[in-house]
Length: 151
Length: 151
DNA sequence: TAACTAAAGATCAAAATTAGTCAAAGTCAG
DNA sequence: CTGACTTTGACTAATTTTGATCTTTAGTTA
Image 1 (cartoon, rainbow over the protein chains, first blue to last red):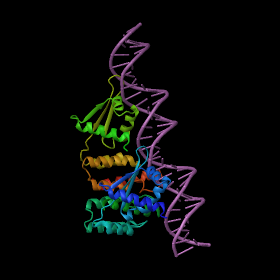
Image 2: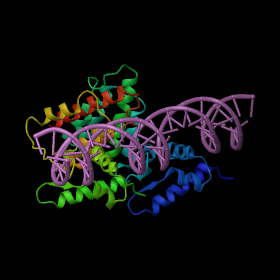
Image 3: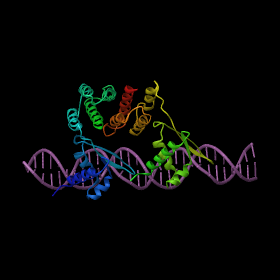
Image 4: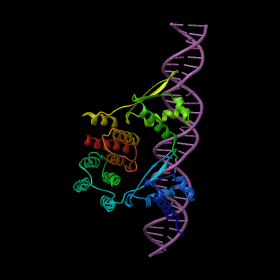
C-alpha cells in the first residue's frame, strides 16, 4: 500500500504538469480533505518533496484567500548548476566562501555586476550582525534563496 | 479563490491608472456597496496596500461630501534616493513593508524584476529564520545594504 | 452665531480564515 | 531492534473580515 505522502506528491506533480502557467496554487485544507489527512501532512509533503534542491519554489499566504503556491523552476542549463550551488552552500557558509561563489558567477556571466553587488551586500558580516554560528547559517539560507530565485 | 481585499486593491489601482489627474477621490461607502463589504474594509485595503512605502499618499475628509483621495507619487531618481530609502526602512522593518518598497522600486523602474526577486528572497521570513524582533532588524539591515550598493 | 443634526470617514478589537511548527506516536525495512 | 520516514494533532502565526463606537465636517435651526 502506497503511503499518503507519495500519493499527494504524485497528485501535486500531476496538476503542476497540467498547469499552463508553470505553477499551481492550492488551498492546504482542500488537499487535506481530498486525501483525508490532517493539513500539516501537506506541509510535510512539501518540505520533503518540493524542495529547492529538487527545483521547486514554494510561497504561501495565510488568512482569508490564503494559498500555497508551488512553482517548478526551469530546467535549461541551470538544472545542474542550481543543484550544485545548493550543495556547495549547504547549511552554513562563511563570508569568504560566499564571496568566492559570487565572484565565480560573475566570471561565468551568470549574474551581472550589479546583481553581484546586491548579493555581496546581503551576505556581509557587517550586515548580518548576529553571532556565529547562526550568522553563517543565515548567510547560507539567504544566499541559497537569492540564487534559487534567479536560476 | 480571491479575497475581497485584493479585488478592491485592483479596482482602485485600475481607476487610478485611468485617471487623468494622477489621483482619485472615492466615497468610501460607495466602494463598500459596490463590493458588498463593510466600509472599514476599505480602510484595511488602503492601510495595507496604499502605503507610503509603496508610494501612495492618502488624504480624506469626513462629513457631508466626504471623500478619500488616493494619490500616486513618483520616485524621482536623485542622489538623495538612497538616503531617502534608508530613512524609510529605518532600523527595523516588516516583510510587508519591505515588499512594499521593493514593488514600488519595480514600478518606478529603478530595479528590474530579476533584481526584485533577489531582494524579495533575501527579506523573506522563511529565509530569515530567527525570532522577532531580531528578524525585522536584520531585514532592515539587509535591505538597506542591498539598496545602498545599487543606488 | 451657537447648538444641533446628519453624513461621512476612522479606529480598534474580536472573530474568522488560512497556513506553519514541532514533537510525540506510529510504521516499516533491514 | 533500530533508525529513518510518516502520520497526527495541539499550539502558533499571519491575514482578512466584520461590527461597534468614536470623530470630524457641513448644513440647519433657534
